Length: 178
Image 1: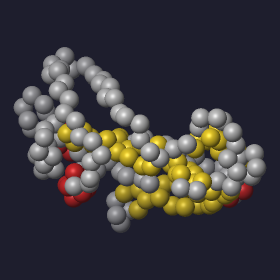
Image 2: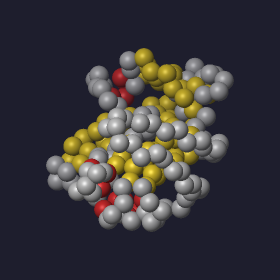
Image 3: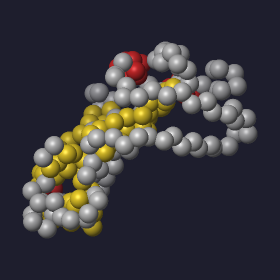
Image 4: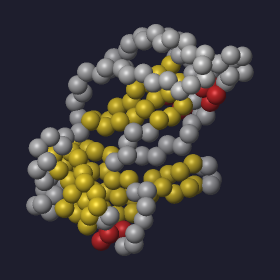
């Protein structure tokens, strides 16, 4: 669930060995104006599940030399509305409530031995016929920065699952290579 900024070469080697659904090459103009630039890339429709888009500055995908970024995301028919400790799970397209969805609640705990945040499940709830779950009943006190893993049948939605990670190679000076 949680991944800290990763300078770990093993992590990037593992990522580049994953199976790709699709691979494209997109040339981008060289920016020399020191301004932030954005790019949009068309993605065809995907089935429900968890995905990541991996970006690399070369076709080689060499974790030791190349610069990487990736963004993880979920595709789901589930959605949720949160108002303090009240959570409503609904169908993303129709807005109809989802009954009997399971909501696992996690917070982040710093593990000093591993030097990274780890996911700590602090409670679990199930939605009623109105798609409603009172999260405060399972966590016993108000907390912030929680992550929900919402599951109904084969569909899973992870709240806030749109994290961007970059490799340490990205912080080399583009002009000098150092």
